[in-house]
Length: 101
Image (cartoon, rainbow, N blue to C red):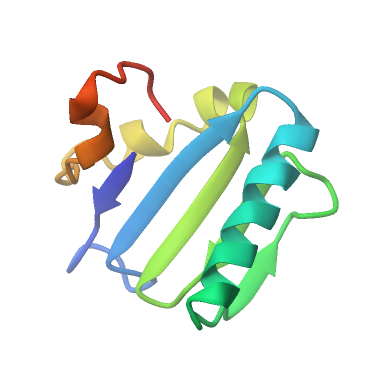
């Protein structure tokens, strides 16, 4: 899920929130994102939580990526905290994929 927090957060313009069913899955998602960003020349300005693998945060300045272990995503409910912010449509979800990422 992508939340547009422009003007509502001093931290970033967008929060990207996703989850995995295990701490290993969280680390795998994080490693893949880091590898792809590096390929594209995008600098990561900060990283938190990788060693624990429960809630990883990647700071890309305008975008903050949150990768959660699923039960922690439900517990912290970032989407609920930012309920009044617009959600950004993701094209691949329109192609028949129904699960929340």
